[in-house]
Image 1: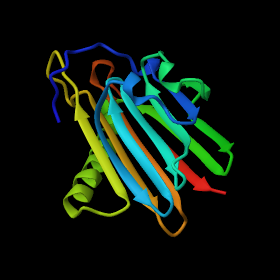
Image 2: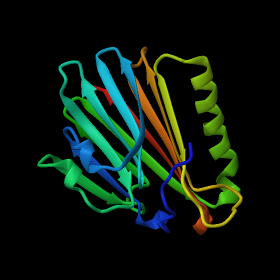
Image 3: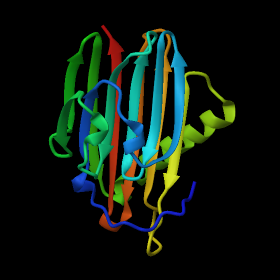
Image 4: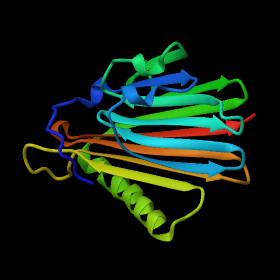
Length: 194
């Protein structure tokens, strides 16, 4: 998907992970596209925002248990009065936390375009085949941002979410490509009920 947005020179090193214990105020985010998964007692909404991605997990009672926003923009007003935890990209390589009855694991890695391109295209293929097959329990989004010159890859954000009904676990994988810096940031979040 291509947008009417104008080019913004952003740095992968400015990415920050914000965990929110509660519902985020989506109207405070520049949401470009969304998708969702409805599973056994859960609802997971994923989205690509003007500066990266978000997801929020809502339980069968309609209560938002946890939300994640990974973004270059350091305006956290979307969290409202909810408790938040913020991590820089360098601090967010491996994070494990427990929130009420949810076990949360986050992993990120930054690669060069050359070393990360194959992994990037594999996840894009996974999303496209999932969309074609309309697989239940999976959701995927891809957004290509404006660029000022032709690069090996365009500035792109990819979000892929999968719900495993057997383990009741959720995996969210993302890609954030910054060709202006020869960088691709990969994240993987795993959520498990306790």
